[in-house]
Length: 416
Image (cartoon, rainbow, N blue to C red; front, side):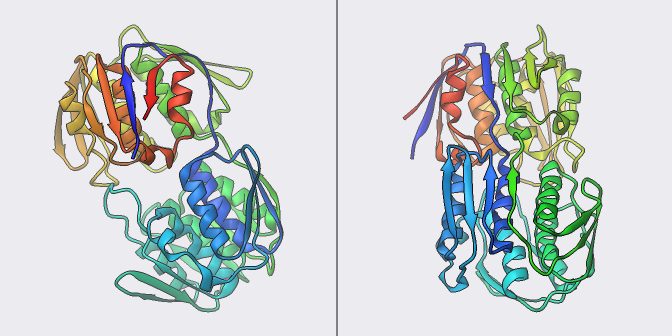
């Protein structure tokens, strides 16, 4: 395992390109399995989650190759479900998105229970119930799930705004005869982009970006050329890093429309931004204002960004509250911030009150998951002294060359 070694105190300055969205590229790659024709995916981030998914797709017998620095070609003409690499699937939470496309195209799929980050319970009942409404039979064993049946159009009401359940039903419905109505569908930008991709492949999709999506499936789907949007979560992470270090930087490759809520919070804190020629300029304030942040389904504030904002709360002049009702493990990074000098009280598994400003000092830390790991890197950049963040590979799942890109902005960070 590797680690980041950070000496804080340097204000981040310069220009950095935001990479393609992790949350968009994973369902896009899975959607390639819906067709026997080649699909080109552009602006693909070079992250380990993409590498794992490509290996799983190749294990099925499909062709999947890098055709450029950030371009992938997938052709799933020859697929054999019996060759699926079960060990890779079991260790990769994103493999849950294989269920919809494989079920729709081949009539059955058996997968080990997917693994992933330890941020709280994420049961798959919403996926299974929706597949059953579409005519499938679901058999859950102690460590695997088998889904089979001839699918038909249906009306699926999801009990929560589940992004991955919405994406799985969208992909299954795209290759299913009839009309499928998804109510309480997730509206996140990467769900909207999946809808656009499925439409480009031949399905009819209405209501993308709303909480009711209607899909009229096609008998067969064809290949397409799809470009991944800039990652709004990575953009938010870099905004926080710039602000926490008192810097000023320009972000390129940003999907501005996806950042409305993030920028609302950023501006309320006092961080200044400007947009020109498709670039986002971020300037740290002289003093950070305290804030109250609650995560909500899109277009609300994303749960994946609340952890980085907790670093800003430690530097705000006053009391801030962060409330994340989604997962009970999302505040696991707070005790580490306290060890670095933060004044924070976890009220319950979903709420934390942070009082500032407090000086942070270096500490030796373990990355718990992708977002909390990035949070501790930001804390290290803002702290005095040396911070070591262990298990750097966890951050590779969601951030491309994070240390190198931060160093290009002037951060004193290296990887060993």
